[in-house]
Image (cartoon, rainbow over all chains, first blue to last red; front, side):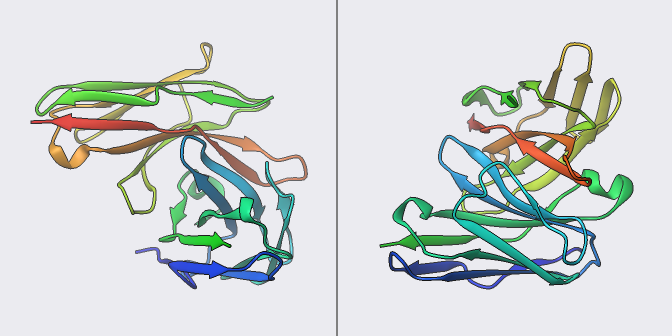
Length: 114
Length: 113
């Protein structure tokens, strides 16, 4: 079974702090994604990566950056956390070709910025 | 712009059939997926339609009409455990290569006894 893990289930940070959210997948997937989920808005794509060291902006990249130094790991960075970044953050991965039709999600990190 | 429209809530009784519709407007289209998410859980993949027609997986079926930019998820023999949120999602080609997925806002399904 595909396993996607995220470093924390719950995180509380203060405004202005630098925040790192880590995601690791164990299925050698090419594609990895970061979403945020807010009530009534569904899942919104922040950044994604389709190869090591490759990254592409999603729909709401402002205030975020990412890093993918190894195939299995995709990190989301909040350079200076703000209260409007309080949200549920979901990481996902998918394979190449038709495997890309299915995304596997991690359990999520609920981030609260005070 | 890009948008996916689906109802915010649907209520049905146990044992019934329910259909959740999804219409989309995106710059490109490579397929429509459906995901289920229980409260406190992660989204899990249910089905994918790359071509027009019906795909069946047990009690769940999904339909796609690319000419109408429309699809639906059909849940039969509803069970209480089907109470969850359901998301439609469009797979699209990103500007600099690779594929990205755009999600709808989700439909909250309530199954009553």
